[in-house]
Structure formats: C-alpha cells, structure tokens
Image 1 (cartoon, rainbow, N blue to C red):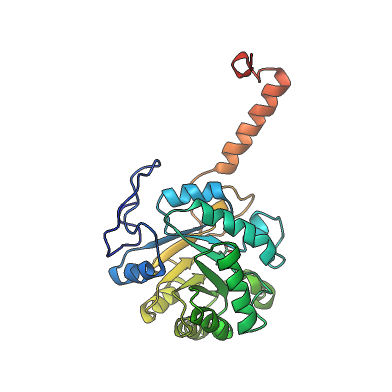
Image 2 (cartoon, rainbow, N blue to C red):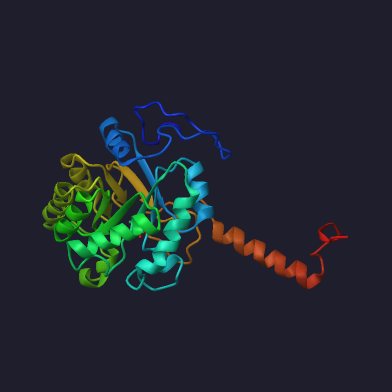
Length: 290
Ligand code: KIV
C-alpha cells in the first residue's frame, strides 16, 4: 500500500513482504509519523487485533497501527458489551500482538474501570500495558472528562491515543449505540477533541460522528483524527478486524465495508472436514505415517 502509509522523513530501509509490495514509509511506525502523515495529507490505517496471527498479517500488509481494543470483550471473550473486560484479560492479548509486529504501532486500549478513578490510577494502568505487554501507546475514552488522566500519562513519557464521539464504555450513559455530535452537540464534541489535544494526546479516534463534524474537528486540530464511522474527511481510518473481514455474526454497523467473508470460508471448511471424517475420506493414505 505504497501511498497509503505513514511517511518517514528518515528514508528508512524497507523489509521484504511476503504478502505483496513492502509498505511504504518508516521501518517502525512511531507517534511522530502520525504527525508527519497529517502534515503531508497521507491517510493513516488502523485495525484492531487480538492475537499474533492476525497481527502478523496486518503488520506485513502495512497497516500503520494495531489497536488491541477492549472490543476483545465482545470478539474474544464473548461479553455482550466492552464493560466487563479487564486489564488482566487484555494484557496477554496485547503481548501477543506486540510480539508479532515489526512495523506497526501497537496501541493498548485501557478498559472500563481502569482509569476513571483519577490520574494516578490511569498512569498505573498505562504503565502495566507498557511494561507487562510491551505496548507502544495506550488509548482511553473521553474528552474533557479524561483530560487529567491523559496529561498525567503523557507527562510520564507514554503516548496516548484519545477517543471521543461514541465511546462504547459509556453506552449506558449515552443511552445506546447513538451517533454523537449532531446539532448542538457538535460544539461539545469539538471541545472534547480540543481538550485531548491540549492534554497531549498524539491522535484522537472519532467514533460514530457525522462526517461534517469530523471534518470540522480535523480542520481545527493539529493532531491527526482517526475515524471509525466518521466519514472520509479525517486523517485516518480504523476498523474492527472481525467486522471488516466478515467474521462477525449478524449485523455490522453501516460504516463498515466488509472486505472478505471469513465466516463463510471457515464455515464451509469446517463442514467439509466434518463430512470427510464422517465418510472416511479424511485422513487419506497421504496423511498416514508409515
Ligand atoms: O475497542 C475497540 O475496538 C475500539 C474501536 C472501535 C475504536 O475502541
């Protein structure tokens, strides 16, 4: 994806990529490359990942950052929402993703209940993700309300990706999966985005925000905006991998484009395996050890 990756002013060496052309840009994506990308109008790409297999594939394809999202609550642990997932559950997933990547920036999502208590609690959690899971940055939800937490973490040398708009950890407070920033609420959303920038975040996720409002936020901010359901006028795009690859069962949000039907491929494969075992077609002679 030569023109779609975060650029690097240092002319870093590219590595061989077995999945196609080597990604353009830096040998290892750093937060400063996000800033370069915004300045040069080059889109940033991000996907969630919760394991080493998908992390390796996404990394080699040149995805700029991998978010070990608390959406693992739904997509790995089978909870109905992201609220029950814990730091203890996310640390091993983050470690696996961090081990698998060579180039992408790995962002660890701080789960509900691990930072709302104040700046020191937030720092404690962020340090755990950096130290025990080897994440490269952390993400937390909230704008104005998370200002002091972001400031404290950043002042300790840990990069923070902020997250405003629809924040799934507050889905009960927000009254459901609702688009944020419509009408009069646009000013509040802009204030949230400006607050996280002021606190020192290196980028901000805008989730389920009208495209016109996301465009305005992107214009007003110096840090890059990463859209997930925020239209085209942002600095980067993030998707949940199980949604974009067609693994998710049932409805996916309207903003998702499904690039594959992995659920269909896997379902077909598992049916054929079962039928072959039932009929005796598997294992065949070539699968036997002599
Ligand atoms: O956990 C997650 O996957 C997220 C993205 C949807 C932004 O926070």
